[in-house]
Length: 180
Image (cartoon, rainbow, N blue to C red; front, side, top):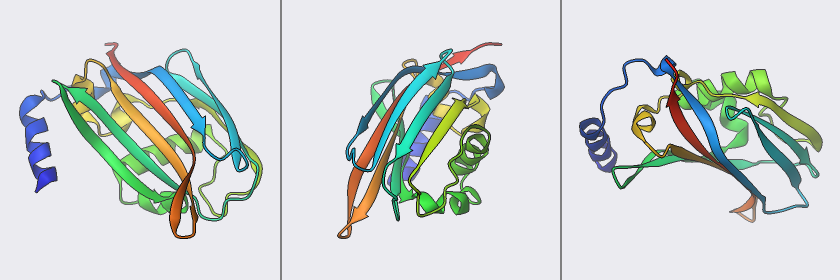
């Protein structure tokens, strides 16, 4: 019921955007932290405001990683959560068959990274090159009305003794700009 009410409020507050292809996401700010440096190290850089590059060094095999993806924004002084889900990293491909956000992310990742979304994650050097999300690739209609943009936080975990332990996290603050 709570989700239904939020959806109704969003629908009433926001106007529908006629052409998402006229919008592009720009990285306004990117920050990241490594929680367990014995497992991984990475660096992230933004290229030309709209692309992201990353170098990821997995230092120990990770048997069953999890990640939490959060997407939210402030619209009219209200924090709107578009997406908030913790899932097994290894289930990413399967989830992409049933979830539009995962499907579009997987299609984008296949072109930009050597991550294969299989477990265990091997000790290796992984990369992301020119990660760019077109505005029409993510179903985030409310984000187009957010004057301050929106935030994406991805946190990676390992499972130890039936508890999730944070390995690292990355936070993107994205702006949405019209170009046509």
